[in-house]
Image: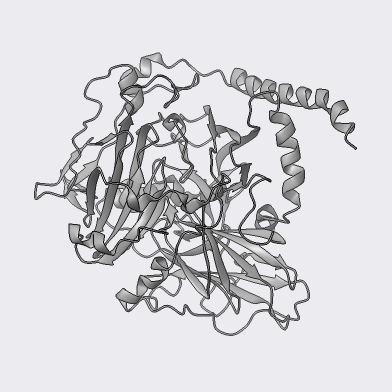
Length: 596
């Protein structure tokens, strides 16, 4: 039950939490600070009944909740206790003006083993459900991930009645081999094959039939009858799309990737790798028994993949007995490929709701803006390039620069990367390269993800959200624009693209920096299916991009600039910061008490 207590909290708990961070930030900036220590290390666990090494954060698997509010400054001091370099990334957190904090190899040097690095960023004008995870060395396959919640400010109402509580579900496919073993499989030129199971909050399946071994620890979510909960679900897996459902309960979709949606009821919902969703679920069933919570493999041969199913238990406080019978099955039919798109096409933006600011989300009329550039990014099945298995976008398998791009710019390191990424696929030989998109600041671009691979993929853009205006099967062409949704398309940062299909998105390039575009399917990402956009303001005056932080790490051609880290000094600096915050808080208390 530890995982449930970690991720379950009544709505009233936010007010007492926010009271502290609001006070602690008063003396530092216009917006409050919230600080975390993340100690990333190996622990031994048996989520599928097999003892294995997993990656924990602060001894927890999955890691702890990072909880903030719109415009808060977030400080995360990461201690790397692994035996290899580490970076944490924060998909969907836009890092406005500050790609230095993004946590991917194109923008950050890795944190060496036994070192620490402090990320500091602002969750500027954002709300919603996100997660953090490692971005290097296939480490996400072993853990290191956890949820992020960005709450609305009190003056901005949420577009639904305040729920009675929240429950967070981290779902993911899982192998009983660790990330190093899985890496070796890919490096040998083989595919990973079928996962060994699906985890829900780091735990294996409830024994719903004889196929599940005895003794597996499963998750139980405790709820009260008649109450409504906000259920946040994150697919942090390797490569498997998962269908999420709760037996006999409806899922009212209200938010995805930080954008409020038009509210639609579903009996089950497909959540693809890297995606996050919020649902309202009312506990309106009788208590004759518990109910199944299911996350099962999707867009595969579901008979063969039956073992790739996660099962948890929803337990009413007055339940009369255990869950029983067969698992509920998805209502949508993915054997009919055209009907598979019905659900994602139904996800629309709630144009009457405020987001992080007190103006309607639909007030930005994206459909009336002229498109300045179009990029068609085509993925192909992995193939051998220079003797190694590689994945590509537009025929290029990306090789990460040894010197991060903005550091290379700052110190004029020549040859670190190229700005010649093709804006559409050509019939050229596949190659390894450091080719990136030379994007234009304040451009309004169209990106078409064309999936010519054999399995469904999720694509993500760091630093931005984009409007998902269309998806279909076949080959995209200019005449498809006539079918675009130019009014209430959902704005998000991670979108699925069906095999043999395409998805078109629009985004406004107003966030200066270097931003990763990647497939979230971890095997394809590891094999090079990514690139970057370099967006520079030619009239930069310090207002549109932050400078490198004082604690920036150096590597590659600049490794000689890196000073040896003194761990006691770094820890003392953090403790001193916290002590200063505490002393400021204590100094404020007399004036605070006068209000009572």
